[in-house]
Length: 175
Image (cartoon, rainbow, N blue to C red):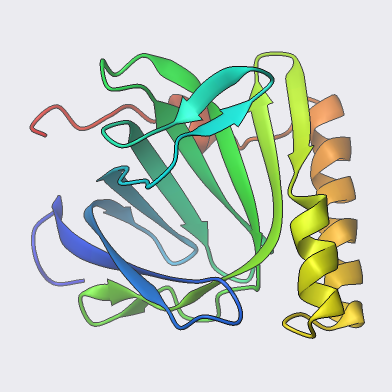
């Protein structure tokens, strides 16, 4: 990336069977293995976990995309920029992080993990089952997504997840 950071970026996110949706963000950091992007969430419906709203329009996220990994991680904040927790999407591995001024397409595999302090929730197992039933996701790919969740759960128990770069990140002040 040749421009100065932070700079605008489009996040291309696909949830099968739909085509990719474009979201706007602010690219904060680029390495050979990851992108760090801040964005303001724009949701039709608030997301609740454990009886608490974890995502709604106007909330903030710092997204971490990793090359060749089966997950991305969002560090979530409310509209007042109070930290809420970590949202981990299980995704197909991204082979190339950037494509011009956009991310490469991130393909969601439905399963998610929400981490807040010592509480951990595995989310959307029913959506993955439905995606397999409708052949949006193969059985083999669904099994791989489930194994990735188990690997993440093991790393959480060992206090190795989320990675330090995620835990240490802070919202960019100029937004």
